[in-house]
Image: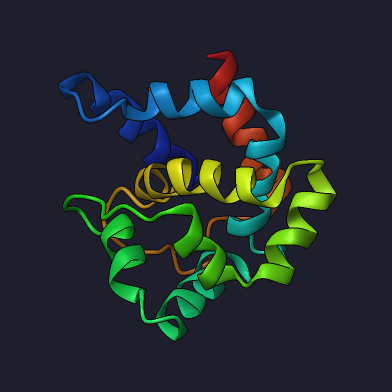
Length: 150
């Protein structure tokens, strides 16, 4: 359970601060379960985009690889707008994801642009993508659900 240990370690490290920290991020996801499902759908190995590695490839193809790399790395996270995220994912993919979870595509892009940088950052606390990825969507949902209850 190396990934879970890493995330729990990151949660413990949030006492030093940071913009909102993982607590704020989890609070946002906990209040919007569809957003949590959409995020895990993007990041899960079994997702339509090939997990974090597939998402990294999409960002690189869109000329925004440095943005996602900042989320994985140990430095400050570069922001992304909802419009930029829509461009990276593609309008059809975002619309499909939004329809799946009953969210307006523009709203989903804006919300995901708020949570993805911190979520990816906390799921890659050592500044590297785990060789096996972040796990399947169900695993990520369970892990985040457990953190929300804790």
